[in-house]
Each structure stands twice: as structure tokens, then as C-alpha cells.
Amino acid sequence: MVLTPRLDQRQTQALVMTPQLQQAIKLLQLNNLELAEFVEQELESNPLLEREESEAAEVSDEAVAEADAADADGVGLEVEALESIDLDQSIGAEIPEDRTLDAEVDNVYTNDSGADLGAAANNGEEFRDSFALGPVSGAAGAGGGGYDGDLPGMEETLSQEVSLRDHLMDQLSCDLDDPVDRVIGIHLMDLLDDAGYLVADLAEVADTLGTTPRRVASTLARLQDFDPPGIFARNLKECLALQLQDRDRYDPAMQAFVENLELLAKRDLAALERVCGVDAEDIADMADEIRTLDPKPALKFETWVAQPIVPDVMMRPQSGGGWLVELNNETLPRILVNNHYYARIAKEANAKADRRYITEQFQAANWLVKTLHQRATTILKVASELVRQQEAFFSRGVQHLKPLVLRDIADVIEMHESTVSRVTSNKYMATPRGIYELKYFFTTAIGSTLGGDAHSAESVRHRIKSLIDEEPAKKVLSDDKIVDILRAEGIDIARRTVAKYREALGIRSSIQRRREKAALR
Image (cartoon, rainbow, N blue to C red; front, side, top):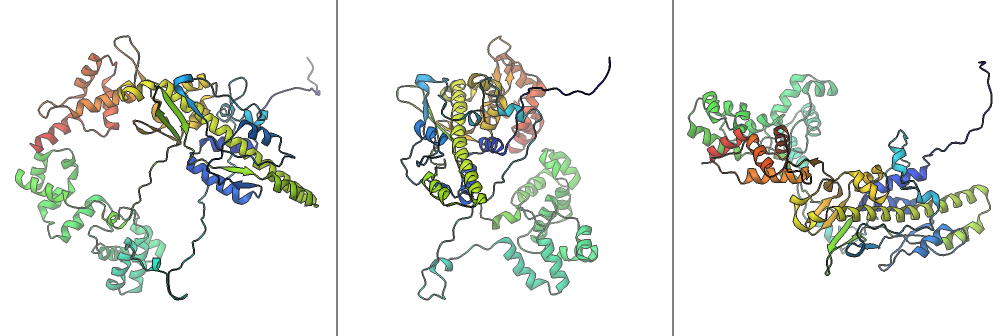
């Protein structure tokens, strides 16, 4: 056999991760609020996109078809998924796809063989996002309210809560006279975490500021006298010690108590009595005083605004039975492609670079509209199948949550598992039982000792918590006893699995629970 070079022609298929396809995958992972941010950025950068302000706007198949052939049309295409699925009539049935979309867009999430883009992305196809999400800056509102243009408006004279930094700066300017100490103090102030703890090594601080560790430690000792008590502590024990010193209650017995807090956590009161050299009554008094201290002294200066979860999918029961699943249209962006503006400026553009720019922006706008429509359809498919397969949970509670994996959904809707994973990531569904992340409904299976259906891990965790909550104080359930109870109920589970689920729920061991309940009696 002679090895010689030769030329051959071969025909192969390869999936090329174009920037448009990368964008489509990224949009599938975003929730509605993140999607709105991205669309705002596109509205700012693409002159052919505009926001639809009408409240009654709807997406029709004809509009999507017009966008597919929009080179000469003058009709804007709107994107908003208002379609819903009547699960009472056709739950589990596929949503008709918009066949007017071109093959490239239709294959963003699924193709004829059932394997979608997610398969390629998870099989070694590496790519980088072609865009970055960032905060959307709003236009500044006009001030006003004053009688004189030079005077502040009424809204600018309202009281404002004092921040922790302002509170500490006021004390620093009064208590530290030396400029070097002030510089060290400000630097240490910048190293405080949200709870008020100092998260830095003093030697590194000294090296950064070009001073000695002794000077930094001396300044820190003065800063630890600041209000609130416990600020600038380096750990929990030091934080509690500083607060006790402020109350003049840090005697040798209390010092030993603070240094052995782990014994209090274990409810080992006998060992605490030996370490502190006091009796049980004194230990109880010291424990009560420790509970009055603030382990996170900085939090009282922060104003936390609770951010409610905005669901991406809504479901509700119907009067005649069954469930209705629909997208949350209130948070979906509504955009149009301004074809009239495109046709006008395309005629007026003479330079080649201008014509190329206009064409690129027009293609990008049409692609975004089609991708948003396909994203909405895909999310609705996945959510509807989730509701169908977990119908027992919505009807009868968490005890009836069935085991479910991504493949169970992917096989029914004929998509790849990675696509289902992207759809269910960081998205929530509002149900009659509350708001749940879509990932919540996927749980591993635990076998049955009675030969019936398997049990979901989430329902087993719920059962373990119920057993421990109902246990009597004089008969605390051990992990082995919980295993016996669950196996009697038909749940085939090992002791180590019970211990893992109990720890994940933040529940102490039977020994610790017994000590805690004995201390409360």
C-alpha cells in the first residue's frame, strides 16, 4: 500500500454557532425581567426597533409571516405571546408551530429529528455570548417644587436615613485626630462586610498603607469602641465580646462562655458548666444575655427593599375543571419592526457602508422578533407539560409530587434535555399553591417497598420534616426510627439518605434535639 497525497470531496453537516443562534440560546435562559432589560438595550442600539405602547396588541400568525418576508413590506411586526393552553381540553398536546418562520429560526430550539441546538451546545460546541446584560438607565426626572430656581425642590428636603458609613465617619472625625489614623480608619471602614465584620488581614492592610501592623491594630482597637457595639469585629465571638464589654459584663465566666459557643450550639450545658465554673442557673442567665446581643450590628443601618418574585408563567383552575396555563404578559416586552422607516432611509442611503448598516440592523430586528416569538412558544410548551405531569401535586399537595427528570418533558415535546433545562432555569410559575421555580418540579425518584410507584425526593423530605415537627419532647425520633416509619409507609430509603435530607432541611440530630427540648422544659 502506497501512501500518496490526494484530493477528495466530502459532504458533511456541521452546526455553526452564529451570533444570532448564540443570542437565541441566551434569550431562552432569561426570565421575563432580564429579557426586558435586554430588549431595552436593543431598542437603544437599533433604530428600526420601537416599543409598542398599545395595551391590546396581540401576535398573530399573519404578523409573524409578514415579518418573514419583510424586505418590502411596510407593516410593523409585534412580539407578545398572549396565547394560552386550555389544559382541560388538550393538555399535553403540542402547540402548533408557526410554519411561516424560516428554517434557521425554527431550528433554534428544535429540528425535525427532535435534537435541538442545546445538544450541540452540550456536546463540546463552545461559544461566547455575543452580548452582555447591564442595568437599564432611566431618564432623570425633572426637579421642581421650589419657588426659586436656585432653591431645592420640596422632594429634595425630605429626611434621609443615616447610612452606616456616615454614622462611622461622624465618630471617626471626632475621635481620631491623627491624619494617619484617619486614613487607616477609612481604609478599614471600606473593608467591612454587610454584617459589620472586618474581612481583612491586618498585616496586608499595613503593607498596603505603608505602615506597621502595630499601628493598624492600635487604630482598629479604637474603631471597635465605635457605635454600634460589635462593629469592626473579625468574627462572631469577638463581636459578642465587644458588646459585652460595652455593657461591662465581660467577666472571666462570660469570657469562657463566649469562647465555647459551640458547646451552647450542641446544647451540652454540663460541659459549659465545667468550663465556666458556674452552676446551671448561671449558665441559663448567660445564655439569655447572649441571645439579647446583635450578631450582625451593621444590618440595622441598612434599608432592605424586598424584591418580590415576578412569575414568568401563570396557571389557574378553570370553572369546568382542568387548568389554564399562560405566559405573564405584563412582563413580556412588546416591540415592532418599523418597516416604513426602513423603506424610507433605505432609498435615501447612497453610501455603501450606510446601506450595509441599514440592512444589518433590519435583519437583526427581524431576527429578534422571531426569536422572541419562538422563545414564548417553547416556554409555554414546557410549562404546560410540567402541569400535565404534576397534576396530582396541584390537586392534592406536595405528598403527591411525582419523580420527574428533564428527559420526561423533553421526550413528550420532542426537544433536547438541555433546552428544557434552559427553559426551566431562573423562571417561576404562579400556581394556586404559591409561586414555584420550574426546577422545583424536577426531583429524583425513591423506590417503593410495596412495589408501587416511586416517590419523589421532595415529598420524602416533606414527610421527614412532618415527622420531626410532630415528635413528642420525651420521644425524639432517631434517623433509624424515621427509616422504619418511612419503610412501613412504602418508602425504600437508607439511613444515610434520611440524615442527608434532615441536614439539608437545617434540622439538628436527634441528640441535639433531645438536649434542646430538655433545656426548654
